[in-house]
Image (cartoon, rainbow, N blue to C red; front, side, top):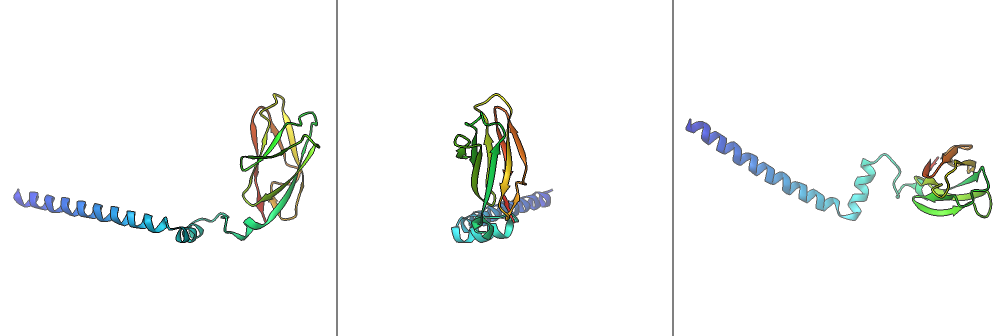
Length: 149
């Protein structure tokens, strides 16, 4: 019986020591990753998506949106959550976009269904597609995330 007790005490102390060592290793790795220069390289190797340091990010594209009913001039267009314009001056709006920009249509001011169409894109834009239509009614609808070829 005493042999089992000694064995359990030995296993318990080994588990406790290994937990403490693992926590210290975790803290050390976290400190290394928090260093800005190294974290950029780690994120690049882990992520398959475009990052800010990717060459596609600096490429600019152009998207032209058209509101299909001109009486809704207060409809706003958002890029990454920020208002970039509305249809008050004309029924078309030209947007300068970069890769991974999120384009949204804000129709919260109106109760009716409002349609906005993509009528022009530059040659280097893969998404959103030409002639895509978004319908919004009292909400913010996502047109899509910009993908540059």
